[in-house]
Image (cartoon, rainbow, N blue to C red; front, side, top):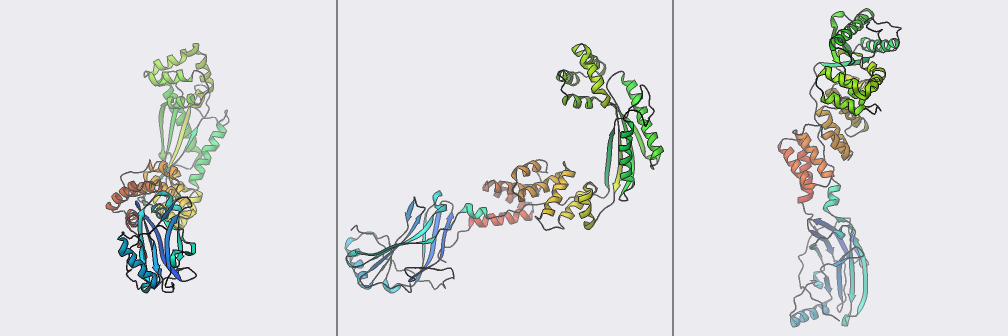
Length: 487
């Protein structure tokens, strides 16, 4: 039989009281507790408390205990524990003296069968994340004949940095919007009224005018009948299709805008002093949009002429010459009528709402709420609840370009681990705020970029952000602490 190398080591006894999670081995003669497999960086720390008080070994016998780390394919035996009977102990001592070999095992003298801490540190390998710790037990008699061989599971709970980090829930930061002292809002309708050729009088029963005027009346009724709103001004802006002389178009479109004003003054309960009429010019922007969505084969030619020709009269002439004039005549019939429009906009203010009122308004007409009011409503619900999340979703929908609304919407997306949506909102947020920097750290953490997340949390913490301070504390505790073994 091959010789074994042993360390003759008297174990420092520990007066530790065993916890209730202790495991029994060797027919309840051996107790293991405080078992831990803890990965830290490039090392795996193995620890447990071994209680041998109830262990009995015959005088001529020797018990070998080998903790074995295995995943079924890989096996790493850890330092062996040897417990000798009284007579066998003397033989080992003589053998060590004669062989002068450097021993490697932990030798527990028979009279020291108490409680001790077993610790090992081995290089960590990825397969160990799913490994188990087994106890291989060999009992030998005189002549080293084997009397018993067994293998029992100690634990399959390997605590890796990845597992510990996955259990961390990073805290996102929200920004409370500033209070909107006066809530200015507006409603706008794009009216395409029809007029007889070269006329500027509104005929209610002419072509599609009845439907257009009904829609304008509905807009006025909604605002005037809402006690939460106060009308502050009405803007009417006329636009002309870009054909013919500009001066004539301006005069005609302004007269038609004035005609709508006169009609509304007569039919709506709003003072004439609140009206303002302007001329928006020839509707080239409208023509570009119409061409972009059209199926005309010449549309790219028209778009290039509009883009590259700055002189108004020359641009019109070039458009008229395309394709011998037939495409232009098609546009006159199918596109140009829609460019002759009048925009009617009602400016009004909205009263302020408390939280209880806000809970109702957020469902019925959310644009009446300021971002600050929405924030108060959101925080009246449990953080992270469906109602809480929904308010921030509504806020960014109503205020799609607001930096604070986007920052808070990104925070909500991060709590749901919806990283794609979070990035979309974060692109519109103010990147200089501590809240943004903390949330970018949360994004990095969820993406597995731990070093980047630490840098972001550190920067935001230095700026005074409480969420970042908490995140940094959590993260550093996971990465810097080493769980004591056999404690």
